[in-house]
Amino acid sequence: MIRLLVPVFILFSFFVRVEKPTLYLIGDSTVKAGQGNGGNGMWGWGSVIDLIFDTGKINVENHAIGGRSSRTFLTDGRWEPLLEKMNDADYLIIQFGHNDDWALNDTIRARGTIDGIGEEFEEIDNLITHKHEVVHSYGWYLRKYVNEAKAKGVEVFICSPIPFNRYGEDGLIPRKPDFYPVWARQVAEQTGAHFINLHEMTAKVYDKLGYEIVKKAYFTNKDDVHTNRQGAQLNAEHVVKGVEETDSSLKNFLKP
Image (cartoon, rainbow, N blue to C red; front, side, top):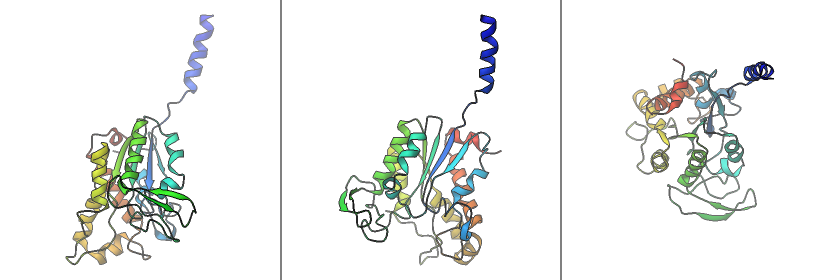
């Protein structure tokens, strides 16, 4: 009987495969523009970052979607199915903020969040969904993503949102003392998530080059918001640099 069990065990072990961990990305069109295939020349950094990771060892899933804020990614029902899939071998990178700076309630998008990272809220009857909704702060939504993912053992990173090709009177990318890049950092500190200062790393490059060169090299003709493939690659490299500066095991999955 024992002699029969040994070959069966060996055969079973041969067919069992260890599941690879997954790196999940959530965010807006600056992470995934359109279908993520360069339509209209627009690329988000999440659509090219898999080229920097060893996808033989880790899966990269880009679940970002254009037009979403930290609020509407949740209220659209996109977060819960992802959370259900996650386990303690996985990683999550979050980048929201661009679409949070919008009206809380209107007939166009109704996607805004309350400024800051506080616990204040506002009740609305959503003019688009026609549902009663409690709207929270930008920080509240980020905390929800981080805390719920961490509760499943997922290692979480928050990116400050990438800068647009827009400059202040001093010829530099504006750094506001009380805005989304700052709030993203504060939530990372609150929750113990890793912080990647993507906004600052990319802004430093733009500062040196100026509007015209940056426009030609990194952005589409469509606007000063959406990057071309080269711009997406620049931001992806900065995200990876941010990962490398942490003590996260995610850097073990980068290509040499």
